[in-house]
Length: 283
Image (cartoon, rainbow, N blue to C red):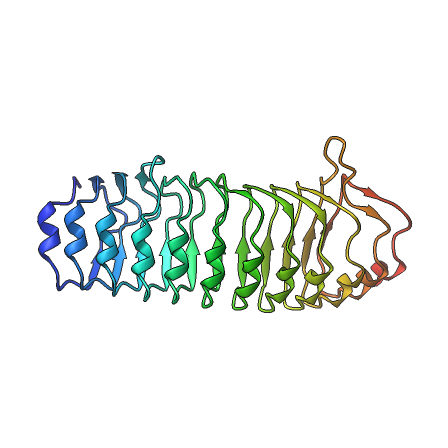
């Protein structure tokens, strides 16, 4: 328990700093930037507070950083210097208390595979530089205060298997480039302010198993070729009819009957018309 001593910065040859699930508290000493040999930093599950020191940019060899479940200051966020962590593969700040906007320098972490910034107080728009994270497989910013459009550059992340943007303030239409995410298995855009048509390009994601699109302001119709999504198990787009917005309309596509893996389909509280496709009875 207690704060980390400033002298910890003298441990320049230490490669693994694993202090998870303890009662350490206080701010991280700026001297930690002197631990230039670090490969793994696991500080999750403590009571650290204050701002993250910019000196941690000195961890240029780090591959894993997990500072989840702490109480860092919401008045400061990720330091821009994290862009120097070009070897980092896992960056986790789940429920860490951080705020401010995501720095554009995050696009410099070219080896990143897992980015988890969920359950924080992040604000501002998503930087377009996230499109440079070509190795990314998991991208989770659930339950923050991020606003503005989903950047079209998201379509460059062709290795993504999970894209979770639930409970933010994203608005405008979903970019058609979403169809480039050919390895995507989970797409969660629910609880936002997204508008426009669900892009037809989503039907190119034949490996997608879960699509959560509910509680937005989508309009138009469900893509006619949704039946091409052979792996789809869950599709939820309920409660897009909000206030004066009509929500999703038109008839349900006949191709729904081809979704042999489907076990959850919810489009309640919209403006769907027409008859139930006959093929649904064969699922």
